[in-house]
Length: 270
Image (cartoon, rainbow, N blue to C red; front, side, top):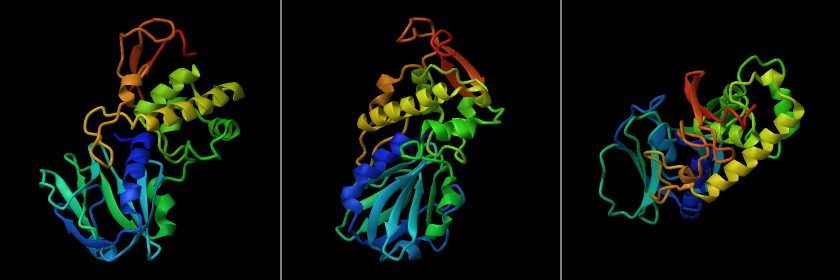
């Protein structure tokens, strides 16, 4: 599933082409996305000028000139890409948006787990989760330490809970906790302030590097211009069970934690 770095990359690659453009046509070919595509979606988006392209957690958020927001979640396999007007239609092209310069923004999603909606600005937190964004200044060691208090859940589960921290998923929690030297199954409430400091610092480093590398193309992910990311080549532990730890050469271990595959070094992470 595309996570914070992938969505941030899509937003950054699309923003120069979208901001200031007007939507002239919306074609919804498949409404059976997550939550359904509302019957009013096309009418709410057609004729609107796109004023800003940002990200909130795992969602791309496009500000419209009437104050509403065009919300996009890529689900497991979604791609939101920009192309010329003569782009050849592909299977699983569910929503096609035509801009006033003739170019097309197409949402393609084989598994249909994505979300496409136009919402009121006041509904944003309810849609995306109210958790702190790891790239916000508010994501500090003190903030994370406060979130962990009285939490019996593993630290990995807390970091993936969009009500607490918005934007992280399975790939990046594995990588962040490895860089921080914290084992994923540790009970959150037992973390010390120093461990929270290391997790926050590792979050900033991992996410910044992943964005610089265009995200992780594990399977379907592409940026807004259809290009693959390359951060998967820099993964230290994710999906590397049995391979030597890059720090100590101990084989990486795998386990299932809160229903998700989890990877860690039994020596470097405590």
